[in-house]
Image (cartoon, rainbow, N blue to C red; front, side, top):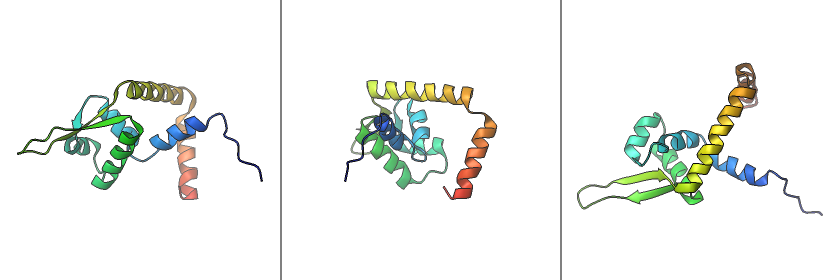
Length: 123
């Protein structure tokens, strides 16, 4: 039996798996503006559950895109999250390029058609 070969986009696929979770891109978009406390982040995002928010933040932290800073004192618990340096700058640049590509090459009817197909398939 032969080993499956990695294709040329396997690293890109790994990155997309990190970013594809619901709320992940919205979280990154909010963190572009600088450090933010969890409560404020949740208010800005809307109907995201605490569980999902913390799962996404933990995943982004483990990947090195986000840093968690504990600024608590004896009277107040204060945890902030922020994008981390060059890694974050690079992914934001890639996401902006991807957004530009999408605007230029994906028509709104193609997007709607894709979404309808996914809904029909139960995705």
